[in-house]
Amino acid sequence: PLVSMKEMLEQGKAKGYAVGQFNINNLEYIQAILKAAEEEKSPVILGVSEGAGRYMGGFKVVVTMVKALMEEYKTTVPVAIHLDHGSSFEKCAEAIHAGFTSVMIDASHGPLEENIAVTSKVVELAHIHGVSVEAELGTVGGQEDDVIAEGVIYADPKECLKLVNETGIDCLAPALGSVHGPYKGEPNLGFAEMEEISKTIELPLVLHGGTGIPTKDIQRSISYGTAKVNVNTENQIAQAQAVRKVLAEQPDQYDPRKYLGPGTEAIKQTVIGKMREFGSSNQA
Ligand code: G3H
Ligand code: ZN
Image (cartoon, rainbow, N blue to C red; front, top):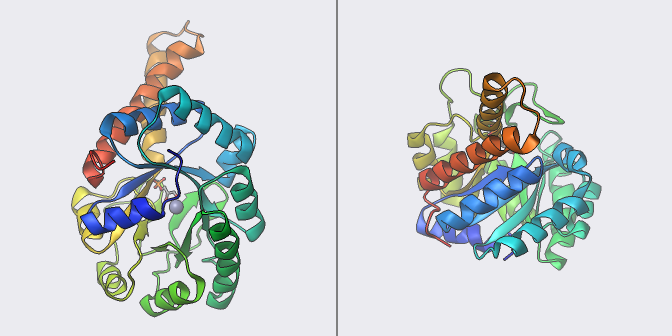
């Protein structure tokens, strides 16, 4: 069923696993991720950035595609459609009214008071609709669609507590050195801060920039209350490699089913691997 992230993340935190957010870009991503989740009996979050939403034809198109495929596949596992890095109250409202079951409001670039003000407004609307809300503090490095970070600022544990207490969000993404896209060298996650945050905040934590984070760091993050890990780039790389291979080996191939199909399968296998790594397999 289509649900918010609230219960699935609370359960993950209580039982010691993380639910994957896998970003979608088109129909094939939705097919691959829903099939992986059902096969693995895993809860799953479909992440939709504003750019990907535009690319697919708008938030309503996204919701319609997801619902139709879930019906077709007779999906039994919990699925959330989540706005990734929502840039404003208006964008979050648009997603909520289109049928998204979860939104992230990313006001991490501005002053704390502004972040709290806009996040509270989003929570107020979202909770009327049974939609969960994720907020962010600090900056995730690298670039994802419209979200470009100048430098990586680690989230401050005291500010995290204030944001949580004053907004009523359902989960928190404290940026602690993670990066969107591939890492240059090993990631250097702020585990001291993460541990401190997990001691004062009851809510499930979210780890962005899941691509390229070693398993030991994923496990350590989960032990400090991380219940959601976002993965985007890794699926894109797997898909592109598979498509490139077919086109290189068969230069005369032009049937999209023949070159996109292997790309879709590559996404599915990548997602299955992540679900096992995060411990969410067989939890739905
Ligand atoms: O919000 C989405 C993510 O944080 C994805 O990061 O592309 O590095 O996996 P990634
Ligand atoms: Zn992110």
